[in-house]
Amino acid sequence: MEIDGNLIHISSFFAFNLGIVVLFIGRRLTKQINFLSHFNIPEPVSGGLLVSVLIALVYAASGYEISFDLTSRDILLVYFFTTIGINASLGDLLKGGKPLVILLVITISYMFLQNFTGIGVASLFDLPHSVGLLGGSVSLIGGHGTAIAWAPRISENFGVTNAMEIGIACATFGLILASLMGGPIAQFLIKRHNLSPSHDEPLDVGVDESDDAQRITALGFLDALLALHACMLVGFILNESLEAAGLQLPLFVTCLFAGILITNFVPKSLPRITGTEWPARQPAIALISEIALGTFLAMSLMSMQLWTLIDLAGPIFAILTAQFVIAVAVNLLIVFPAMGKNYDAAVVCAGFGGISLGSTPTAMANMSAVAQRYGNSHLAFIVVPLVCAFFIDIANAFIIPWLLG
Image (cartoon, rainbow, N blue to C red):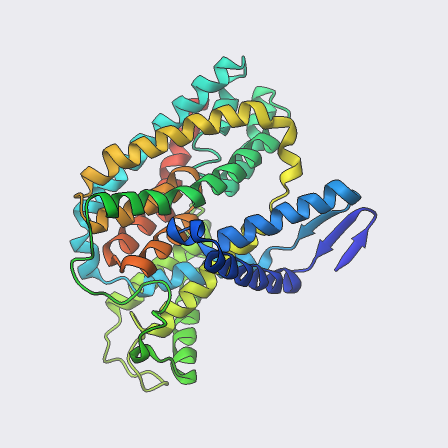
């Protein structure tokens, strides 16, 4: 920890451990407050929001600003998506082909709707269209990374001097809304249509604590960790090769595909130094997935600097209110019917709630909270990550410049 004037900087090691503490705070809150458990609010969301509010109060009372080194958080994201890739089989991908295409078409169409909504509301405040895009897919579906990447260009080319602040503010509040929206929507659909899983499946993220058969040994955990690191190494090499060819993708995307490739194209009979089979769909992989996702989301939310958003509250509130209403309507009236009106569709809706206003980890956390309460949907955990971790970034790369132009 370093103190420079009124800035308190928390190093990566302490930020990571604080993220774990925040995760436990969220767990205690969820157990004590019925509202949080009833509506499937993810534990890292409740803990992270509470801590971010407390940090904002410290800033208001003392003037001291707390910032975090989030390097370890970004590494956790790579771990999480590598576990998703390891658990994916070609059979599941082929089975999920039609739902994947349907969700992809809906999501890309929704991205245009989201941008036109942002532009329309911005026009009511006599703000330029570029501000509307910052309140559209640049920051909402795109998340903080896309907002940070596009804000300098919008600021320079369109004269929006506070483009970075607007983009980060929309992404931050969108993340909060997405975290609070997915679980209640899924619960509403499950209760209203009396839905349940078609068959019992092991969890993709997390371990059922009531199932003694899912006991994880130390060697089993190390075996899973070694497999993850092998996939991450291949993903890193793939990422470097694509970058040299002129295509830039986030590292977690190439690690996701490395996991898929190795799981499906390396023979299971191939000898391994561990003497065991490739650990796809094993409890140890699911446990690492839950640890990585929960801690990542807790660190993301606890590090939000809420006091930086006050000056932009009016236009941002109006834009996000409109975006929230439209996201809920699209989820209930389009996504759920199009995905089959079954339990898988309800879990996908929880994920789409995270995609529409937040980020890929938010979508996965929403689905994980629903799956741990009502049962797993492996189809949802295959389709949603592929749509939001890969195709959305590519689509956004074309949609944003086209609308700016």
